[in-house]
Image (cartoon, rainbow, N blue to C red; front, side):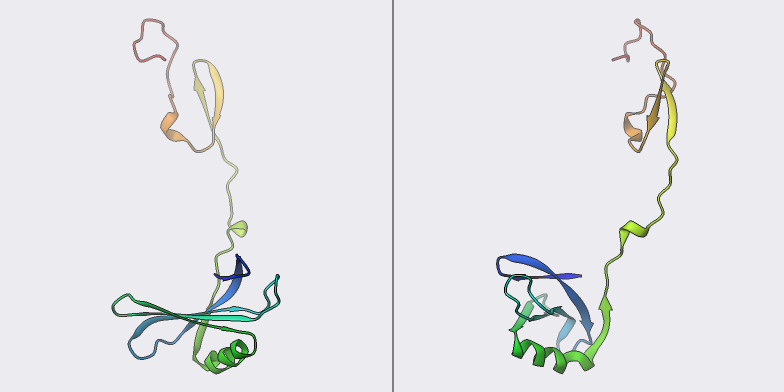
Length: 126
C-alpha cells in the first residue's frame, strides 16, 4: 500500500506494479480515488531507471482518470500489504524463579537471571 501527499497529509492508496518499459527497471502506480479533504482523484506513476534515478508523473482529476485508464492494460498485479492482525500468536510464557520469586518472562531473555540464589557474599549479586 502506497501513500500520496495531498492537502498537507499522506493518504493511503491502491498500488499497482506495471510492466517495466524501455530503460526503466521498476514501475509502480499509486491511485487515490478520492481525497478525503478536497475530493480530488490523484494518480502518481513512479519509475526507477538503471542509474537509480527516480521519475514521478502525477495527474489530478479528469487527467488522472484518463491516465489510469491508459495504463490499466499494463498492470501486472496489485501490491497488497500483509495484514499482521491475522497472524497466529502464541500464548505461552516462560515462568522462571529469581531469588525465590516466581516471575513471568514475556520476551526479554537478555535480562533473565535463571538459577540465581540470594547470597550476600556473592559479587555478581545486584
